[in-house]
Length: 429
Ligand code: HEM
Image (cartoon, rainbow, N blue to C red; front, side, top):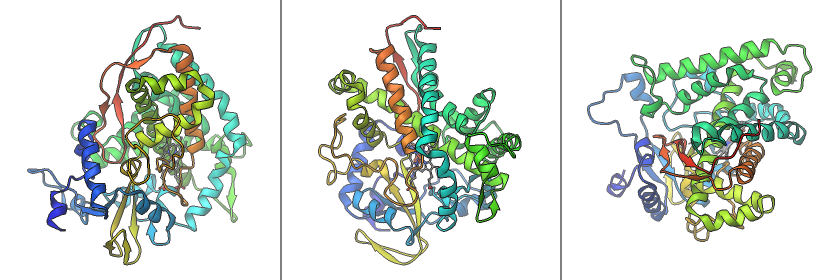
């Protein structure tokens, strides 16, 4: 590591992301200005000694990519940059594979096989079926807060829609929604003190417990779907055969956990950051509110660009190679910091500006072009759009009334709480 790099800000630590936005932006600009990928190590806070098995998972550090052209290059070359060794900078111990090893952490041909199968759940026909449910849920969620005049926008509004939609997709009963919500917070917020595991349980054990609990729930639901031809995704997966083989319950459970993790927190955070951007930019809000349907598609992309709910995805180099002037060795971790590239001055005009009509807007919020591009992107766009359309209609003056409370995580650009106020309106129920 060069002296320059030891002096650079370190975006792989959760604490980097729990600071005021201006500091984060300034440090990311510093990293982009280097031009080359920079190498960073996980810093274990002083006084903390990791047990040897955890210490091993944290070794090696990672290359950090903050420039758009380098991220595109890695995304487009999965034969050089593998997903199968893990997608987060900290390696996961082998016992995690049972619950957390779905398609996002596979390479082709295994990945392609599974993706082909589950894509059946994301066809235009399936999405149209969900459309009504998305609208009904958004209306109900907004209606439930409408008389209060204030709410915690994350907990009371943004978090509720994606959770219900993922559970509907997989036919998980409504009675289990709160349970799924709690377990997903444990999984994605493991590094944040608010979601820290119960006293006496270490973070890895609590992750495994949450994974195990979701898998058990999924197994119970899957068992009720054997031999049925219902049109939810679980029925389809339980009864499908790929090349003469059926998926195991374990495959289905880890896919469900992937959806809970990939589909929930991401969409919740996009909606939550979206409200802060609209509050901070009343001119842009007016442009969108004046033509909700027309401006909608571009406004959604702009929210996803700036929010970049998935901060980074990791790959592992399979061969010695060169990238943006850096020599990458086989086995090195390479982490694509989407949030940083989505502000790349060489790629976006006026990158910090929230512009609901931005065009072109080739962001990498849903990942770069490549085999792992977000499978749920269309669904996410629909959920975000429907939620804001409902808010514009029912609570037209809703705004964030305080600062977003950021999640302490380098992986998920999350908001835990966001106070919001609006003129109360009578419930329609
Ligand atoms: C604003 C919301 C969302 C964002 C920002 C987002 C972002 C991402 C990103 C960055 C990736 C990884 C891309 C890569 O590694 O190249 C990904 C993958 C994935 N996402 Fe999303 N996502 C969102 C919503 C959803 C939803 C709603 C679902 C489903 C219900 C979903 C399902 C998936 C799946 C299954 C993958 C793995 C695809 C694969 O490995 O082939 N996502 N997403």
